[in-house]
Length: 167
Image (tube, rainbow, N blue to C red):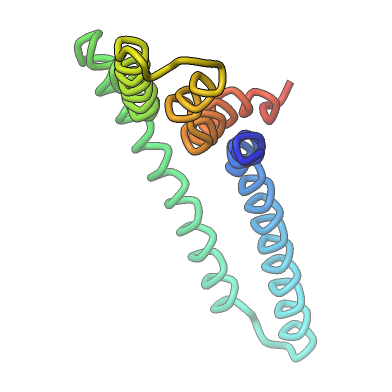
């Protein structure tokens, strides 16, 4: 049961970046609309009083430019990474693409090695398994619920994200 819940959890967690992106877009759009509305209200109020709102307009322009500059800096950093990877050796570029899954590879290989070792010990020790009940106990040691929960979470995260991508 726990492994099913962790698999479902891994599936749901793999969609978190997309959900955060949707909330961020909504928040950005709300913020932009609020800025536009505030700018209009200020200009209307100052125009009604006969004053020029040049200082406020300049302040808003500076804020908008800082937002654009931040976006440009992020894009420049991504472009720099692409440029560096173009000049890097092929194996470095390939390895950079596997940095995140490396932890998964290590965990799965460790899980396989430990389970093979336990299975070898169980089946090579005479008298340890004498009936089906003993075999079930050994398989519960080899494939614990915690291991299955972690493996289910990992598989749900890596392969469940495919359902969250746009078609």
